[in-house]
Length: 274
Image 1 (cartoon, rainbow, N blue to C red):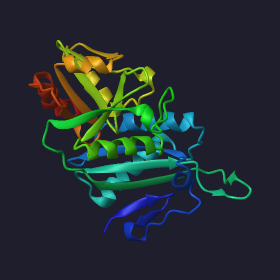
Image 2 (cartoon, helix red, strand yellow; image 1 turned 120 degrees about the horizontal axis):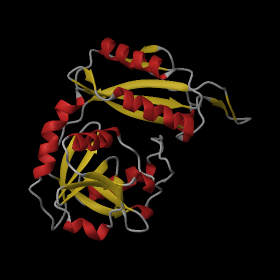
Image 3 (tube, rainbow, N blue to C red; image 1 turned 120 degrees about the vertical axis):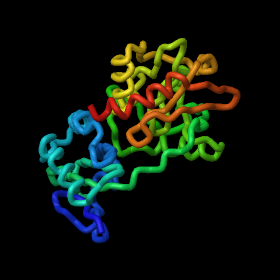
Image 4 (tube, helix red, strand yellow; image 1 turned 90 degrees about the vertical axis):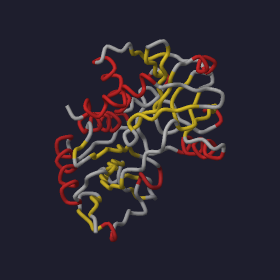
C-alpha cells in the first residue's frame, strides 16, 4: 500500500480520484516537476522547487503553499511511503472550475505521486534527429515545465517507431534544441556544448548540475547555437534528465569513445550529494 497527496489530503493510492473539472486534466493548465529520490536522498530539491515556482509565476497561478511548505510535504511523502529509488511527481494546477460560466474557483490544486525509478538502459542509446516544426511543440521564453507535452510525446512515438530511444529535435533554423523529454549535450575538442536557453528550451535541473560540475572540474562549458549540420563533427554526445542523469547517445554513421562523458558520469553522483 502507498499514499499519495491529492489536493491537501493524504489518500490511499487505491482510492485516489481526480475531479473531472480539474484544470490540469482538462486543459493541461499547470506545471510539474519530476524529482529523483536515490537511496532515500532527494536530489536537487531546491532547484526543482525554484523552477516550479518560476513556472507558477509565469502562468499566473497563486500557490496556496510556499516553497518551504512543499519541501516539508515532500519529505513527509518520502517518510510515509518509505521511498528509496523512486521518482516523485509534483503537480500544481490552476484548480477546478465551473464550466458555465467559465470560472476557476480561486484556489490552486496540488498533487504529489510517485513511481519506481525507471530502469536505465544500456548505453549508448540510439537517437534520431527530427524537425520540431512537424510537431505541436510550444516554445516560449523563458520556458516552463507545463503539463502540455503533446508535441514531445508525438516526436518520441516517431523516434521509437524508427528504433530510437529518444528524438533530438531541431528548429526551423536547423539549430538543435533538446531531446523529446531530455536535454542534450555535445563535446567538441574538449569543450562541453549544450543548446542555448534563448531557443525556448527548458533549463533542466540535471542540465544545470552537469554544467556546474563541468565548471568545477575545469572543463570548458558553454551554451551555444548548434547547427544540425555540425553534429556529425562532434566528438561526444549525451542526454541528461532527472531519472537517467547522463546517458551517452549515438546515431547512424556516428560513434564515439565517450571519454569526457564517462568522466562526468563517474563524478556526477558524488557532486550531487555534496
